[in-house]
Length: 167
Image (cartoon, rainbow, N blue to C red; front, top):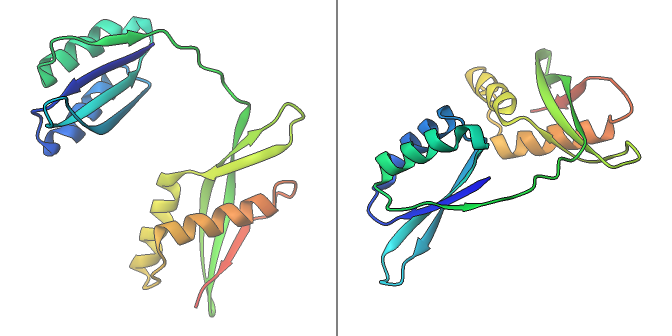
């Protein structure tokens, strides 16, 4: 089920709190979008994916934290796509040094079990980027993600580790 509510008097600092609490109450996902109301005020549009069993708790929290006067509900159907998550070894090489880590990669597959896209897990990439930075290697999170995903895609059929050479 998808819930939608709007609020035009919540300071931006309150967004992370409401998002975290909504997830804790059982929401499967939440999106907060900026919008403009009919009176020209800036608003936030909350879209919350929730199971019926968590509907009451999530709705009560949104009413409490946002002061909303109502919540729209939409009955939705989720079409799950086949995917698998594989842990891949990552080695970062710099001169005579090697830094080893692991990254989980989510592989989306079609009906014939062929990989059609993939994504490396954000938290794993973040951990690698911070570890590299602590060792004096500065590489942006987005560049690291791009390199890891490109190498993971090239290794779809091969379980070899991902090796990245940096200067």
